[in-house]
Image 1 (tube, rainbow over the protein chains, first blue to last red):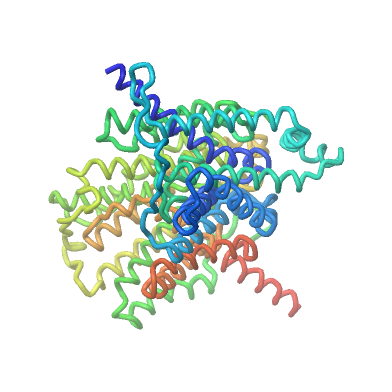
Image 2: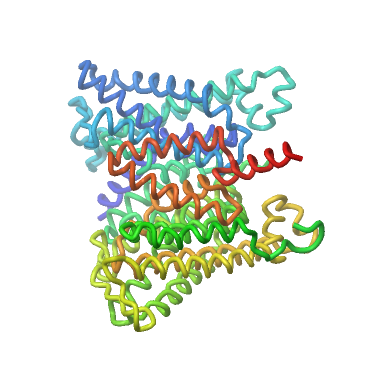
Length: 288
Length: 322
């Protein structure tokens, strides 16, 4: 029973870690640009397909496809940011919502057209398959790997934001755009680079997630709620908030589906609505 | 509109001409009455969102929850022996507006993003609930076995769709008249005030949350009536009546037509449904692509939608002639 519970907790944390990697970029775009971007999952999907194509068509091993996923998604992000997103920074939230839903629909249709509607396969290397025996409990090797990656990414991101000059520019731009621009920070360049970084991380998450979340053209719509949830519940513009939120959601979702499968995804929506009511500004709210 | 006081309740010639179109369509296209009644029902649904989004600026991605609730209410009533259409319609609307009232307190808190998420969450909750409660709703197979009685005990819902069309048109017109009166009343003006400057409304003594709760409840009720209409005229309720795509499509229609005119949703619904009927017959996947492209183009180049564009055009022409 206890071992079972730890297993569920572990799976939930691994799942939450994955949600965090994908959603952290969304947190930055929402916090930094105040842009409600429902199409964030599309960048994760781009990363996932880059990963699969590199593996199946070019024979690149799985671990080496992850950087490719990051770069491809980041490139897609920077192109779209420069051409389309930038025009809508000052638009209303309604316009942003409509625009990004439009992008989601287009990405789904285009992906179906090029790669078909079926699920895409992923071939994990041998050492990531199977179970690892830790302290008397069997843990999935791949899930352990996911958690490890997320710990590394969180540390790297925290260092980037807290310790580097670029991080200081990001923090300054989040806090006050006009004052930052007045101090000589090229706010638009900061926007572009953070957008690219966020898209790249989403792509990385999309590649990592094929084994857990699956990958098919409806991916951006299927998981849209989860990504938005992480950001809305965690609080936009921070790293810590989405991390907590992603872990909480991951654990509740896995535990709910494990212990009370008859109610399905119902639990996660209840958790979400309750959290939004209790913390309207998110767990780690930034006060304007 | 007069300089001071309330907007006029009088009907302009253009509006009267507009309502003659669906009547003319009834006689002109007798083979397309089923599609016609679908358009009318969707137009009613779009009207419900226009009140919430166009007038009160609440971004709702979960309007289908109330549509589906009305549909299941009417469908279940008819399935278990209460086949009288009008009372079923009223009950569908009442149940949906009750659900709207209860959930509105969650929605009016918070800002755009929170509202968006809460409405989305509520919609998904209703969907999941209907999906899991297969013994009541039929789950993904949908609710079948709906047997409708005759309208006024005289007109039955036949295959030719004549009764369904006229019934839908009359309901749409009556609800539209109510909504039109509502938005031109002091209440409607205060909604417009909230839209233009939410922070200043309390300064003139208006309670913003109370008005938002009221309009959200009314909108939910209208969505419920639309859902009940669909259930009654098709004698079937599918689980997609609660789904997120329906909420998203609805928003697209409204934005395509233009928000905040009441007519925008109706025009948008008609254009959208006709396009969908034509394009998705060619290929459903392409249809989604064009839909997405359309949205992006509307947002980037055509804010205000079709109706907004027409009104701007008319003003420009008028100023040139003077």
